[in-house]
Image 1 (cartoon, rainbow, N blue to C red):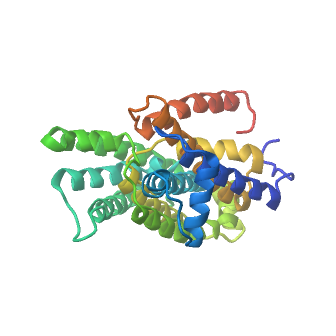
Image 2 (tube, rainbow, N blue to C red):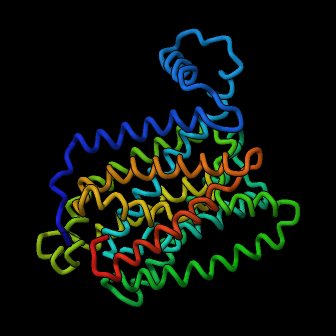
Image 3 (spheres, helix red, strand yellow):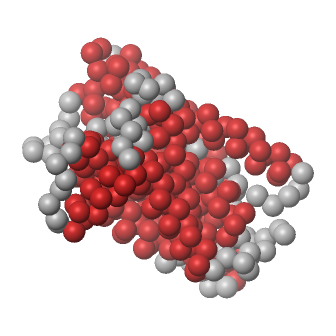
Length: 346
């Protein structure tokens, strides 16, 4: 089964992915510290969607003001991180790659932490300061890594980029530790944020995530053929007419923007972009035209379930979602690694 596209995958399968994601969204809105019947939840959502009069129920503000914006942000963040991971694994031809491989996630985390520590905001848009700083530092991280890689290796080989990304991540992590050390009264907020959390998310956050995801997904889905060519090696990609350096730059920049926005809103959430593509690839096969859209639905579903677990496991206390994804991701990753060692497809 190595490197063979799964012929059983069809538009119907993608539709099933979408239906599972939609069902998970409704399921996650129903459950929490206060459980709301499925029928009531569907009624409220349907009437709100159609602009009709809402029922006179105490569940309405819980559904529309608290849970729905949060679940929407979780869904869009999961889709974004999984898309980034699948794109990076295809580009770098490395099953251990995801958006954080470049150090972009760590750089974005540093920018957002600085915004929290120094109270950097933009007028009338409370979360914009954190977002701008995260995206800015994600770009700066990318520029530093690509500049160093270009100096060391003009061809921008994947091994050089990954090695520099790991080194850069370690360096930025040490700076982040210094920021936390001197942040005084903001330490608790920064530490909780670095573990990943989407509590308190708003519809404004969801709109930003949706807009950025739509733009970036169009770019990455448009490069599916090029990513398929990378799967058989950079030399072969050149031989079939792919502009290797341009494709690398476009993918890396697009991933940086998407990760920067996700980090600014939800903090550092690991393993989604690493594990989800492996699991989805078992269903779709390696063809990126099928893998990338399926990963978006798979990542959305995975992160919504993790967020539900974070809310429910120790209720009324809430775990950081990054802790849950790391616990689950570590177990799944061991399974993936074991399959790889046995020479089977992952």
